[in-house]
Image 1 (cartoon, rainbow, N blue to C red):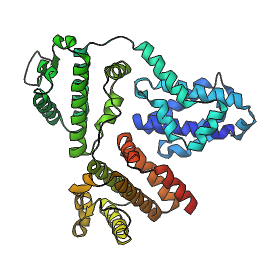
Image 2: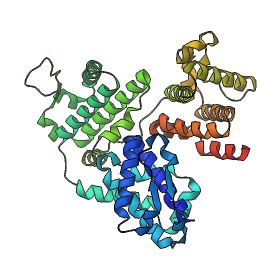
Image 3: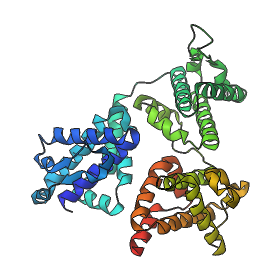
Image 4: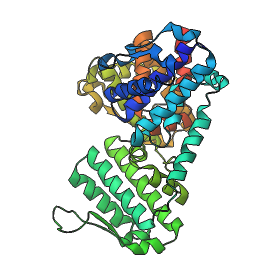
Length: 399
């Protein structure tokens, strides 16, 4: 594989992943800074040019001089590995737990296989990264501190999505409701510091440090799952994704060691469908209007029903199309539908939307859809059998 293709593809993937965690402007600046720094050691990176003053056209201002193709593959490999490692270190806390894994997921499968043959093993790099961080954050954090930290993180994240009052009430009511089944929570006090002076918002008794780890872990798992469900159902927010980004490495590894699983958080099918439909409409609306986007979706759904292609997973009131998403409803029985059948219907719906948009707009739609939907919902869709990569391949064959 040519050196220009390797470096160009990796740079674009890095910018997309960093951009999702921060902003596109920050991502462009950061990756450009890393390249300029590494160019002192890896001269071939002088062939890379990023016009970071034109953020609005981010993916169109990255150029790699064809002269790079004269350089041997060893130098390209060394520069590429250094670029990945240095970018991960440079963005610090924004890197998260699985940054390199996310970069890998941004890359086409055939590209990832090719660079592996060159000696760029992203799976190994991810493992090394986690191992290194575990050595740094080996210290044991007391149960009371980890419980306090996670509850504080939950309050901060929920507050960003709703308001201080709603966030505090949601967490307080949840803790109160779960106290009967989870005795650890009897040692937790929540104070609205606007009305209670000289008190911390969340106070956890040190007696929790003497409680069995399994008991504390099950309590945390339950709270996280409950908050994720509430935010998803009421506001269409993937809480678990935001929590993973919020937590620092020491707390992430402590939770992992306790047995708290931040990967397997259940999302009901109705919630997944609701989020998929909302995302489709929101992406389409960026180039038209919400009401027109719902109209397009309505026509596609009717066509699928007429052709008997899939189960009925959404109802659209044609008399309220001008109201946009307010005209859309998810049937209550969706949760009882076979996940395989529902997955086929969602895949057919996405394929139909992309075909209706045409080649250029269709490709742009799919990228925006993946970015806006979020990892948690993407993973849940995959378990239902929705394969976005297959959709891309089908469209390439058609176009």
